[in-house]
Image (cartoon, rainbow over all chains, first blue to last red; front, side):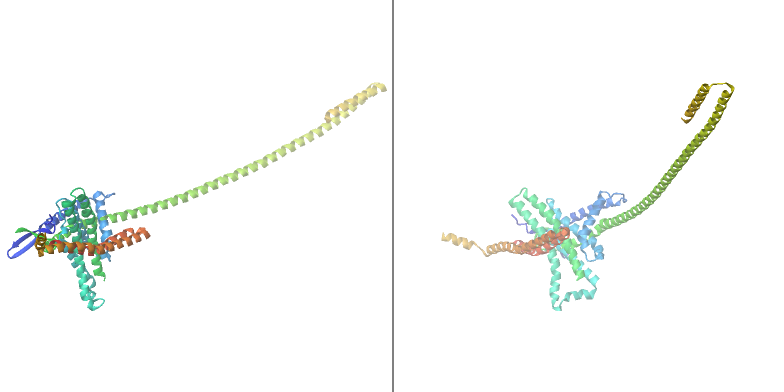
Length: 231
Length: 174
Length: 91
C-alpha cells in the first residue's frame, strides 16, 4: 500500500563518465514555485510603475504591507541596521520561497519541494555559509577564529560540532515537518478516511504549519547570522 | 537517462547544487524585480509624506499666527469701541448735568423776575392807591366845601367815602 | 497441532524478525522521542501565556519568540521523526 511513501523519483542522467542524479519532482516543483514568485513580483512591479498619488493604489498598499511585514517580523531582529539592510533581500526571498514551497502542496497532485531533503539542506547550508562569511567579514579573521576556542581551547571540537549542528537541525526541522505532514496526509487519505478529513488536514499542514515553518526557517536564519556575527 | 525510485532520506544528490543555483537566480530576480523597486517606492513615498507633513505643519503655523493676529485685532477693536462708548456715556452725562443746572438756573431766574414784577406792581399799586386816596380826599373835601351839607349829610358822605376806601383797600388787599 | 505450531515457528525467518523490530523501533522512537519535545513546547507556551497575561501589550514580541522557541524545542521531536522515517523506509 505505502511502498512508495518513503521513496521518490530520481532522474538518472549519464553524461560521459559522469552520473548525475536529480530529484525530478522537487526540481519541477521548485521551478513552479520560482515561476509563481516571479509572476507575483512582475505583477506587483506593474503597480509600482505608476506615479505616487494622493492615495496608494491597491497594489502599492499590498507591497507596502508585504515589505512592512518582512521588515517588521524578520529583519528587524537583526543586531544592526546595516545587517538588516544588507540581508533584507536574502531573508525575504528565503521566506517567500519556503512559504510558497510549503503552500504549493495544497494544490492536488503538487508536492512541496521542501519535503525533499536536498532542497532544505541546500537552503540551510546556504544560511550557514552566509552566517560564517558575515561573521568573518564583520569580526575580522583573528576574532573569528578566536571565537572557536572560547571559553577554553579544548572546547574547539565542541564549538565546531555546535556550529555544524545548526544547519543540520535547520534542514531537518523543515524537512521533518513538511514530510511528516505529507506522510500523515497520504496515510489518512489513502487508507483511513478518504473524505473531508484530508481536506482539513491539508489546510492545516499545508497552510498553517507551512506558514509557521517558513517563518521559523527565516527567523532562525536571522538568529543564526545574528549569533555568528555577535558572539 | 532513466527514471528510478530512490529512498527519501538516503539520497543526497545533485538536486542540492541545482537548488542552490535555482535559489540564487530567484534571489537575483526578486531583488531586481520586487525588492529594489519596492524599497525605492517606499522611500519615495516616505519622503512625500514627510514633505506633506512639513507643509501641513507650516500651514498650521501660519494659520495659528493668523488666528493670533485676528484675535489681537479684534481685541483692539473691542477696546476701542468700549472707549468710544464710555466717552459717549460721559459726554451724555455731562450734557444732562449741564442742561439740568441750566434749567434750574433759568427757572430760578424766571421765578425771581416774576417776584420782582409782583413787588413792583404792588408798589405801583400802593402808590396809585395813595394817589387815589388823595384824590378822593380832595374830592371829598371839595364836595364838603362846595355844598352846605348838614352834619348828617357829612356824616353820610364821609361814611360813603370811607366805605369806598375800605372797599378799594379790600379789593387791593385781596 | 504441535506440527502446526512448529510450521509457524519455522516459517519465521530472520528477515521477518528484522522487519518486526523495525516497525516496533519506529513506533517506540516516535512515542518516546516526542514526549520530551511535547513537554518542552508546552512549557514554552505556558510561560509565554504567563508573560502575555502579565503584559498584554508585549503579545506580538512574545508570540514571535514563543514560535521560534517552540521550533527549536521541536528539534528533538523532529530528530526522532527522522530516525523513525529512516527505520521505516531506509533500513
